[in-house]
Image (cartoon, rainbow, N blue to C red; front, side, top):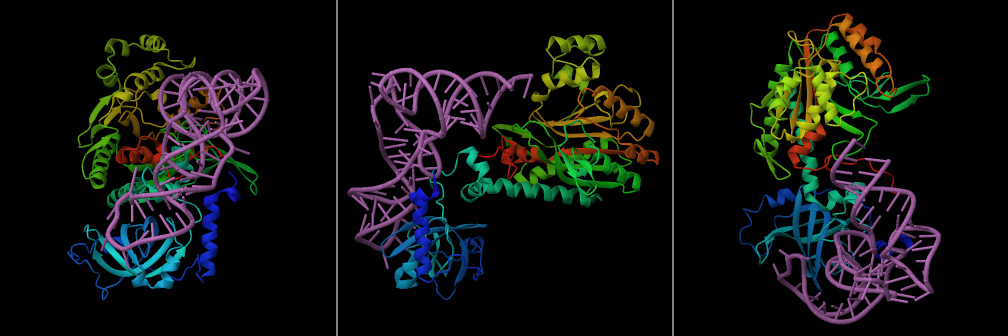
Length: 494
RNA sequence: GGGUCGUUAACUCAGCUGGUAGAGUAUGUGCCUUUUAAGCAGAGAGUCGCGCGUUCGAGCCGCGCACGACCCA
């Protein structure tokens, strides 16, 4: 579809030329709207039954023409700015013959400024009667059809700018996203947490088990990895003496895409000295339920047709309890490592030769329990085997003082009392490396500096990571992570 | 990686058993000074995702590829 041959695009360009011939600067930047559409809509109560505008009180607004109904010598249009949409009435007798001739060259999609007074139409709609029309930016491409709008998912993601212009609910989703992140900052800052920034490019990609993206620094002649997690750096800050820190930023994982995974995603991580994972559960409950009520007006949110009750307190299970009560497993099996491994095999779970019962249990949990946890549920006592950075439980060293939080069957948060014994930490990192030996893209190297930091002494602490994108999905009722990321990753068009 | 579905005008979509392309919106023209999915009249607009094949003839059938959605791993 060559642009030169496309009729609609040609006509738009012709109109732009026509306007220029009329002496109009079609890319002007000499107009400053004094009002927003929202300002004008706020006057609604004062404009009750005026069917003729009060020209003594004039307003100046600017926006994009979203609908246009022309008559011979007058027209109605809807103008949209960031704050909303209002109807405008343009009459030739009011704006003058010359201005009306220019106005007639304007299209849906053009950015235009108007001045005028407010009135109500016969049907009662608050409208602005234009006394002045100012073309500001010519649009050379037609907007999608007014009734169905833009629905093609691929085009919506690839041309998010069009999606944002024509789909108000998309604008609303991203406003909410920003609001959620602001509320998280407020919440943590008010509790004495300090927001920090740690490296996005790391010589060793640690703090999680995932494949990293690799890049290269020319001047230093070294490879670097985009971080898969900020964890090891935030813990270094605990060693340094900052007792409550958090970071909200992007993580990068070189893995598949799905409705729940984007290669870059936003993570909140926070760490608190002298706290335990129990404190983290309390804080999470309080923070998430508060944000939900601030953003949606209720602690019961509708997600894809089902009610999710976020009011505290939330259900708390150990992993074994969850496997028994939700997964329907027999407690006697869980107590016997051999039987756990056998059961995993029965469920066609493929395990590495070196994998133990802890790994098997975690896989069974993912298979049998995870998707059933709709209302928020903390699952604690993760096997030590799958938790290389978490503190062992004092009574049972086979499990850690860790939890994951599930809502609508999805992992939303992961937290634990931090391991601060450098000897144990080094052994466990080494074990991870040894066991993941056949996959050199994961855990390529032991972070000796991190261990050295722990040797200086890290105060006992708890830390947590919350996937911001998934939280936003929940609170905006979005089925796909791509609906809450402005520019999600797609393959190139051609 | 595997499976299913989709890709037709700028947008939203039809298109039968294989017979050379349709609607609405948008656009251009005419009429129209309170419309709001404005109205009426008549008009232009397509590499049917790309390639190969089958056929007298392919939007439609077959194979391959690209992009996307969903499900599975």
